[in-house]
Length: 115
Image 1 (cartoon, rainbow, N blue to C red):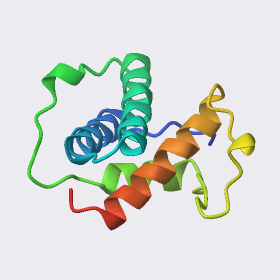
Image 2 (cartoon, rainbow, N blue to C red):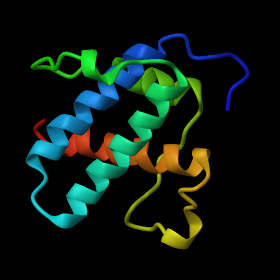
Image 3 (cartoon, rainbow, N blue to C red):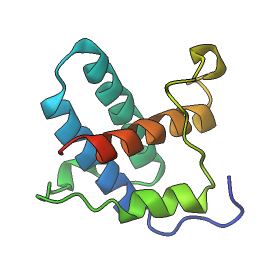
């Protein structure tokens, strides 16, 4: 974690929540549903930490990915390479691992899916 606080947390959480909703709607199999659920659980955790009411988020046609990528840059998060990952190296009970896991999926989803 970086020393200074990322100052756009509500925007970050909103963007992630919209990614979750759109991906969850299009999830075709159990694996994708589980990824969507993992993203949701992370978003819910972050929304509680930063007092963001998820029920007030309005879904826009276009997802503003800028807050997500700014946060990733701010926190120096490196994505997992899912073609080489050993799931034993990921401990989703640790916030850092969970965050990296979720944001890696969000990156790949937003780059490969038509949300």
